[in-house]
Length: 374
Image 1 (tube, rainbow, N blue to C red):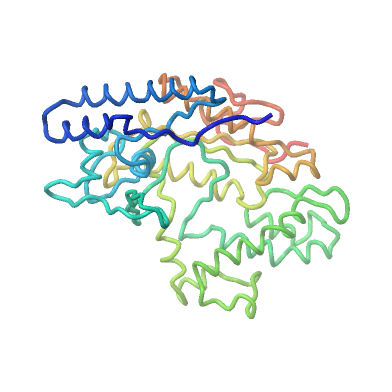
Image 2: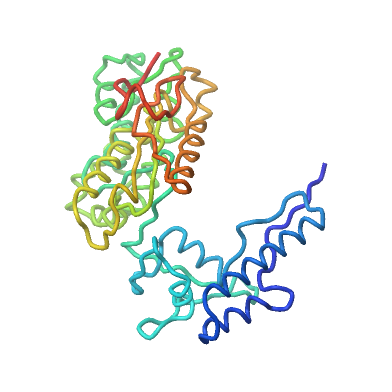
């Protein structure tokens, strides 16, 4: 059965009401309350028009006082640093200053949408631009100091052939080397099917190549090899350290943020990524930093560790011992919404045991004692 829906409704109004209300506000002839009232009336009217047209779904969230890209920049807190506006308390007047400029700063640049005549504002992103807030699912922790992906992945790539040659022996030197790089224990179904085998075949080498070629392009990937890549040695021979540092994770969050991570993640080992990020946030919140205006009360951070969760949900088809992370990501999102909208308390950081759920009174606060539960 076909369903009807539109992606957005023109916001200006049948008689250009929004345009005239904006211009009146800009000239100082009317106040903000009047403009907000006009905008509300337009949204109500446009929703009613869609309902009367018998659309199956009414479009919401498409309204903008000036520009949708500016709306998104404000939502993410990614505002041009040159204006020195606080995204958490951005006023409507400041919103328009970003679009139109002020005495101290020119307006944000505009560009065409492909080959149309529609123009939109271009976000200004720099090395200090931060994107935080929301639910982070298996996020990558980026640190120019070891460990990081470029120190962990080569160990897996290098040692895995010896591990398979030794019959997937968990006590072999190769297995111990892989575990030493931070990876969770392997799950072995039979001599040819294991969790590490799946990651090695599909993710380890290709992910390392992508990061190495982008961050250390001078390295001879195919001549010198991927498994023998030595990040620490390359620090003095290339710009890889500076390239990683250019987008390192700072932990300086300004909005409530929740990380949901699996303890059996075989691509982003939890202690080198999710837990490392939690440690970074804790360090940042215990110290002052340029531009900091928030503390734990306004920008809390939580880490929910899903025991037996891993990076690829579909791996559960082969390894039923694994737990799905998606249900807990939904739980985390609902908890975050309740916190933002009603100031409800976020559940403490915790281990979500196999078969369990995120709770206000966790049996295992903090980290999971065991990465794997049979």
